[in-house]
Image (cartoon, rainbow, N blue to C red; front, side):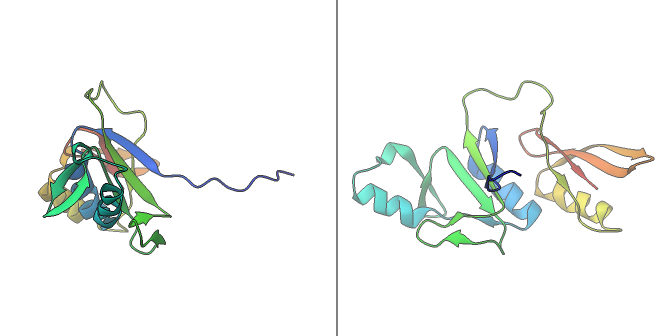
Amino acid sequence: MNSYMPLHWKLVVDCTDPHRQAAFWGAALDYTVEDHSTLITRLLGAGAITPEDLTELDGRPAWRTLAAVRHPEDPYDPASDTGLGRRVLFQAVPETGRGKNRLHLDVHPGPGERTATVTRLEALGATALRDVKEPAGEWTVMQDPEGNEFCVH
């Protein structure tokens, strides 16, 4: 019998613009975009970070290279607004994507809601690539604003 505890995890997505990705995926999943400004202000005041680490977003300080979204019903640290449950972190990297992503999200809006969800996601900046119909089911393959593929079932 295994004596290990289940591991906590978060999905990390490499991207060019983490704040744009967080805004898209926050709206797409109806997740909360994390606001780290209280933590940032505290760290800046303590000299632990510099203004070069930061950008401004909606009039508040934000990490220049990081942004995250979290499930609105999951616990989070109120001192940092960091999610402690289901969470997606977007981190800026210098290189662009090189081909099809090997890991992707599947979103499940519920029976009969796929078409409306695809339309809503397109309005948020996603692109529908193709519809798939197989014996195992039907789904639409889409791309987020930076070209990462995901599926709507």
